[in-house]
Image (tube, rainbow, N blue to C red; front, side):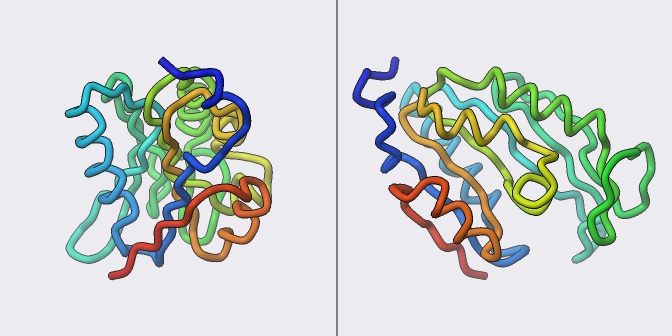
Length: 169
């Protein structure tokens, strides 16, 4: 359980995980989740898992950390994805809504994971909107928040007490 001091707004327990595309941000989150679960902690939130053909990422699955259930989040081929478009990625509106609901229901937990916050959330107000509230509410022991380097300054303004973990290739 979470103590009242952990709910008080002290966000030093927030870890902003950042690094270039392909640096291993999600891999770091997976290792952290494994360690947390090994220590008896509950992990909740969403993990964005890439699917590759050789070196090319062709799709992204979103995983609910409580249940392990996955949905197709985005695809370069836009197969079964009708929702926002971001660069060469076509997102699934249904999977975005499903993942956002997982974040709305994530707390309380020991480890909150939000993989990742980017242009959909910071610029468009779409995507994992509930992740912002879940992180700010602080009903967890620790939070891992994946943020691309170009949005790190915005995340630092939102959570100034957060610590930054930079992942390098």
